[in-house]
Length: 157
Image 1: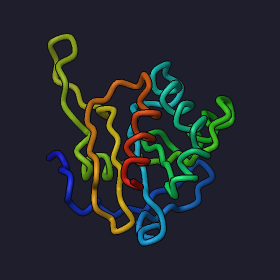
Image 2 (image 1 turned 90 degrees about the horizontal axis):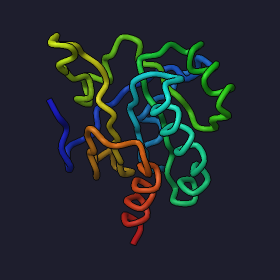
Image 3 (image 1 turned 120 degrees about the vertical axis):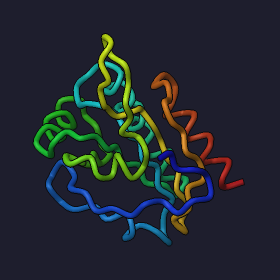
């Protein structure tokens, strides 16, 4: 089930690359949140997307916004990926896929005539009250971080 603008963002607590728990509720009321869901650490498109968001992390901070990347990779894989690529933002591990399902990004696709499930590259912008202001499904990674930054800036004006 796809989430829609105006809905309350599903709450979660997930471990980051350092195995520290990040609880969405702890940030509500203080910061805007960008969640970007991606398929796998180290793949070319996912690497580009994560490094683009990381490269603009300070720009997001200036907008009073935190950015989190979420995939089903485990914490150790996230740590290796972060360190290898110099990613500054937090990467969260949803190994069980619970949060991916809550946000509607765990989707079926036809691959070589077979139905396979995977993460649809998607991004959510959540306001301080925990309301989804943008729900972007099946996005193209090229230029995506800057597009999301523009949307966050528009929320300020």
